[in-house]
Length: 290
Image 1 (cartoon, rainbow, N blue to C red):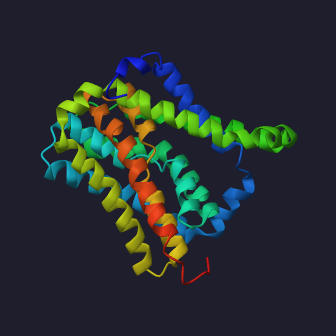
Image 2: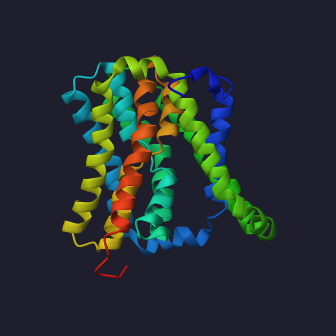
């Protein structure tokens, strides 16, 4: 995508939106109302991760962007990355890291539903004076791209379980293909600005995911959560839905350059989460309780 952006020129905004919706739908058909009851039964872990996602990460993004002297548009894009929900890839990385996959799915679901009000709220509060931000537009896009596909997926799961059972084995494939196309398309659309920005943008975006993951591990550990839950929260905090951030920046931010950090984040987020997962895979869990 960086070398030959034209290869993904066909993947327009309409396809991009559909790809994100397909990703959410592939998650939605695996969910049942019982999953939301489970969230209520484990509020401490879910609330801790929600706070990490929507308090710590936006603050860290603002701090890094300011420290590295990013211009207003890039700073806005950076804060947007910090203010979006956890990505679906975190569930796979949690599995690799020997974390709690069920808890990871619950946390992804909680932050994804939370994005409907938290992302526009944070963007308006932190960025309203930095760049033009359409908060209502962000909320509407989140409803269309996130809530609708998840609701359709859950409804299908409830009323057509036989059909869901048939297509379920293909859901991860749909998720992976969608993710690959979304990453390639996001990078290709802003390939020149990414190359122009150089390491001055790469480093703060990398640090956002790396430091976010480390804080996401050590803070729960220090506040009494066990090893398995802490690993789960670390990966969930580090891995953001950067492709969704890219779409929001493209549709609702007045500055073109605001979408560049999301495109850079797509790559670093996947690498950081995967590396953390592989390292933890080879470190035995001493306390097996969940």
